[in-house]
Length: 173
Image (cartoon, rainbow, N blue to C red; front, side, top):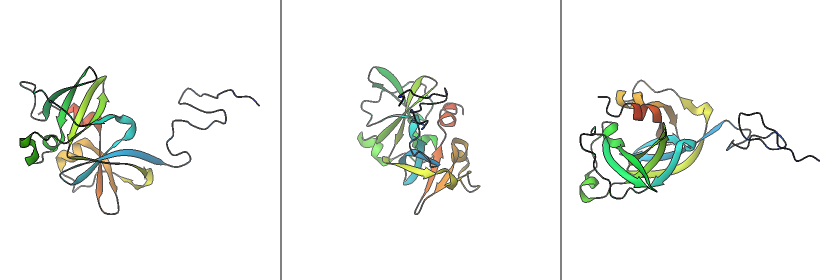
């Protein structure tokens, strides 16, 4: 019996030609890291998330756009912190005045790290791609600009954020 590994150049494969990068082999599921901002659930594809953290000592950046809260040092790398509440046009949290800044979801975009400041982190969930819907017409226009679509769950709506659009628009006012 040969133990050679088959490879097509498109992803990792085992000797029996199973895709080792699939999180749910044989199923059309996509995994999302979920988080909440003002009781609204959002999701980012899990493979785009680099880290989940509680930001400490956010340094302000002079003349930065309002949605840029500042920067942090993450294991020797400078990370820009984006306030998702401000980016989505929501009221700022009353907790921000007492030093509590919430949680951060860190993503990489064009070789730079960004941390999205959110109220709280949810779970990692796998959802069938069949349940994915394009942005509804009733979704806030600002949210539509940064979302790829939604999933209607049993008791809530999860808005899927597009990392590129969230960051391309920073400072683009």
